[in-house]
Image 1 (cartoon, one colour):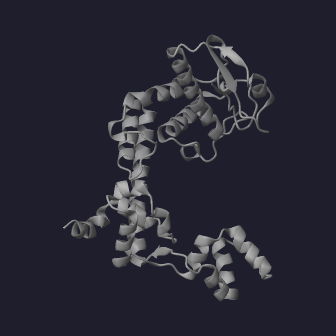
Image 2 (cartoon, rainbow, N blue to C red):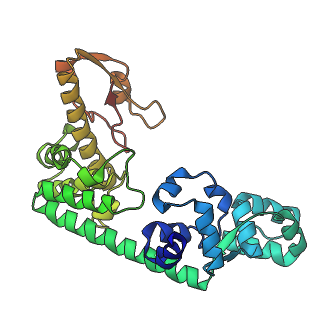
Image 3 (cartoon, one colour):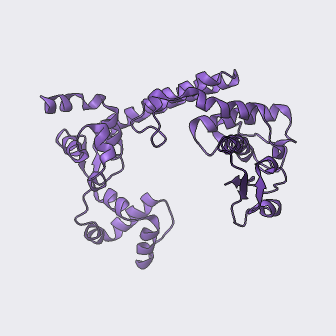
Length: 317
């Protein structure tokens, strides 16, 4: 009875459709052999599900092109082309085709024994319909959250994101229970982003800063490290930082304030400022990196004197 239900209903299962989508351009079942996280969402061993896909005609053995694509990186293909004195320019698909046309048997020998499957026409149809639906769901959730943030309805915005993540096969964040998410825990950072301006951004005029706050709040909500998606294409900050970096400074500032609150609650007396030690770190950030401060004397982070185009990357420990 269970097998019959699985065969009948898997086309309505997001987990099954997500797994199927992994084979659109060719994939090996070996990658899913001990994947317990897949077994948890499929309620069945992934290899059994892949066998079912094959039996039902939504997967099939990969062609030579997919086998070569799966096994070799573009740099490997270029090296093989160079050895054959063939042109090495073009996209990966062109490199593969050039090698096969020149030396098909050699490519078959090189991929012999490789276990790779790809979606059939029906499999691609099912997988792409699922992915398009997921994209539409994500776009709608983002737009709802953006509208709520613009009205400063922070709790509702957090709830929208939590509901979206709870609906995902693999929700974002290790160990986060999105179905029972503490909404208010996500509100404080959003309030800080909208209400506090770090010194590093003090020269940005009000209207531009409002746009940055909105983009930074979306970064915070969705756990991304870029804000470009939520800023106008021609957006300029008017300072040495671009919009993406300036948005990150707002997020970092909210994080710094949160970390300072944790230190106070834990009765921490002294913290050390650390910066990223690379060629992009400015002189002023290097000066404070490694220094210890009493909690009441910690410099504001991101550091207002930072001149790096990538923004301040200092933190406290």
